[in-house]
Length: 468
Image 1 (cartoon, rainbow, N blue to C red):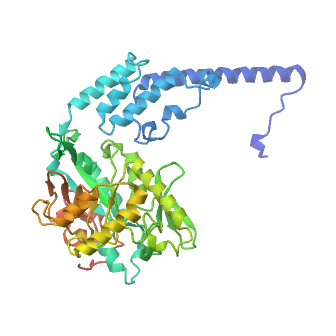
Image 2: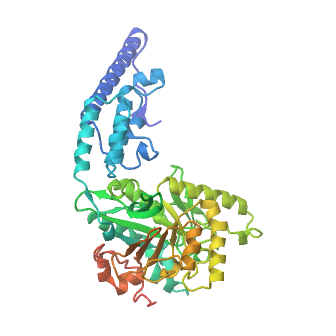
């Protein structure tokens, strides 16, 4: 043992007993004083700003993680002080993401603390903040999208035949983080596409679509985010991308990535865990817990698992992959992510024959929806569409077929405008903007409302970016 940590010799007999007694009593006194100080400090803090991953999001709040007081240790239950702090923390986690109504409702739900000064003060502050919110014009809400993020540029840009495609259509981790930071700094707030427009009923009980009431502080701007091809295709192996999404030890979705030595590392290797952690640090970047839309094809399986029926005889882990993919999909939905169709075979849904259109749609329903559950969103591959700029109508056979399968939200790509949307009587359409190498290199000014391209553009990206 290190000599600095050797026990001191206090002598023998009575002197030793007396000294030990004094030390024990002194320790008890110090512990009691520290405990009292901690309670006093907590009372002064009242309702505190906690990150979005506090107890309301499934993680214990800071007050719940503290060392139990003597009262709790004796009974095995939290003290009244700890229950109050937990309630205030959960309310603050809602309020910091602009859900003031939910925070107020939560505080009023527990009659034990309704008259507490800390509770009434918090309710008053939330009422005032709620009263200052303004309605966002839905037609000003932009929709941005990405593909799988490049984690290792030396592998993606290694000069092989796939480099050009990666350079055109992918975004690097560095670029994505800078884009999110820029948008956060400019007052953007992530919302769900279902916040933007939703289906309700008219006075006769018939379904109809209406724009939502997104309420944010003055100066804030709303946006929708999506990611295409969240399947980790076989051709991407070894090119510097994540290999699949898993459920992390903390219960949050995260990613695996295969290393050069064949080992598998777990971490922030794609958009999902990167954005999750960004929102944990900046909870005000998310409106009422909103996350993005993840669009899935099916032909190579989903989320990095080889789940398609074509793998039934070649994947020895076929059933296990399907079971795990379903669990990961549920975890994603539990954490606010919305899942969407990207067609089964990554097909141009506006150009293929109607026969192949139906075959592809049915395969998606059979191979993907059976694992992830129902969805009403489809993000068309290649930025295509199943109609012109005029509203969809019942004489559009492709629209009626997808509508019969449960789809109500239809998204194409039109990066020439910052926003484009169309509200139909029974559906909603929105254009998306690709934030990738091609768009940044050839049309940087078209992204100036979101970020300054020279500040974001990754120097590891080869130039010129190949034209489409």
